[in-house]
Structure formats: structure tokens, C-alpha cells
Amino acid sequence: MAAPAPVVILATAKHTATLIFLHGLGDTGQGWASAMAAIKPPHVKVICPTAPTMPVTLNAGFRMPSWFDLKSLDESGQEDEPGIKNAAKQIHSLIEKEESAGIPSNRVLLGGFSMGGALAIYSSLTYPKPLAGVVGLSCWLPLNKSFPQAMKSGDSLPILQCHGDCDPVVPVKWGQMTASLLKTFLHNSTEFKLYRGLMHTSSEEELEDIRQFVSKHLSQ
Ligand SMILES: *[C@@H]1O[C@H](CO)[C@@H](O)[C@H](O)[C@H]1NC(C)=O
Ligand SMILES: *[C@@H]1O[C@H](CO)[C@@H](O)[C@H](O)[C@H]1NC(C)=O
Image (cartoon, rainbow, N blue to C red):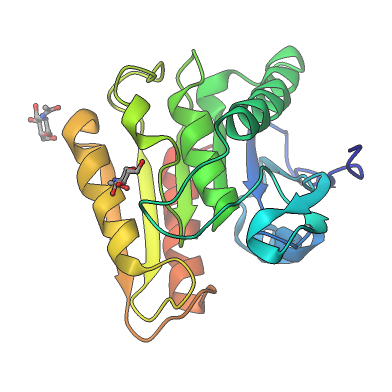
């Protein structure tokens, strides 16, 4: 289950903030590293971890990098609750590592794509200290019934959710349902952006919105 070391892009100015970005199913940290390197401010360090390799039910039990087991990609499908919680613990320990290196939690921003975005949102809401924010791309909120009870983040966690309206993998409807649910307990701090014609991937326009969100919430 050991995963390869994360891809780390060092700050090019004095390091005062960290962005941790989680890839989607079957990908690796390398998959998003150059896109994040291109949009990060100089004082931000980027960490792109790679998920452990495990059998994935959705893909007939084939082994691939995956943060937790995915049984279905359907908003009413069964979820791997212990797997999700365990993955969140791994992400929490990455955040703690930044904290012990002198970066306060409110200078750490999480992001992710697809199941990585789902884990980023879940991990941020369940981290016991305030984070700078979270970017969830083409994703959903896992274990949604446990919220807001499971929430430890405080109710002003800034969340930017982005989703393509032609996503054939994670239906945009699911992203929108997640956005409405998040709004019920995060009052003012969430934003949902829809991208016309975008499938289960990213775009220049979306990356520009992420760049702006990151520079706003991890300002110098
Ligand atoms: C929350 O999860 C349940 C299944 O556990 C699902 O039926 C419901 O649609 C989900 N809601 C959102 C907002 O994703
Ligand atoms: C929402 O934001 C507005 C303007 O920033 C603020 O006045 C209001 O108190 C906020 N409401 C909540 C519930 O946080």
C-alpha cells in the first residue's frame, strides 16, 4: 500500500504557504504538478501526493492509484466509509507536517480533482483547525450524511467548486447538489462555477479561476 513520494514544487520566494493538490482515480501526483506549478504564487509550495495503489471495485477490482475504494459514481451509491476516513487521516498528517515546518494551517490550501477533489473537501471540513480554503474540481462531498455533525473546520471555510456541464463521469447534477448542501452549513463561503462544454477534465478558464482563488486565499 506504500505510495511513491509526493511531487513537491518548492516556493521560489520565501515559503509562507502550501497548496496540497490531490489527483483523480488512476493518476499520479505528476498528473497535476505542472498545472499547479504554472498557477502558484512564488511564496507557495505545492505538494502533489500520489494515492496508494489498491483494487478498485468500480474498475472490476483492478489495482490502480486510488485514495479510497470507489464502488460507484452515483450520488446514491455505496461509499467506502473506512477508506475515506483513513485517506482523510493521511491528508491531515500532510497538513500537520506543514504545520510542524512552520506553516500555520490557515496558510494551507487543499485542492483536488474528481475523487481527489472529494477527498480534499472532506479532509478540509474534518480538519480541526482552520485552513485557507479548498478547491474541488469535478467532484462531490463524500459521506454527506455525516455533515454538518462531522464538520470541524468552522463555518467559513472558503470553498471553490468547479464542474464541467458536460461531465460524463461525475454528473454535474451531483456537483450542484453538493454545492447546495455545502451552502446549508457554510453560509457565505462557498462558490460553485460551471464551465460550458467542459467534460471530466480541466480547462484554461478553470485554471485561471483556481489561480485567482489561490492568490486571494494564500496572499503574500
Ligand atoms: C448524499 O448521499 C446520499 C447517499 O448516501 C444521496 O442519496 C444524496 O443524493 C447525497 N446528497 C448529495 C448532496 O450529494
Ligand atoms: C454573508 O456575507 C455578508 C457580506 O460579506 C455578511 O454581511 C453576512 O453577515 C454574511 N452572512 C453569514 C451568515 O455569514
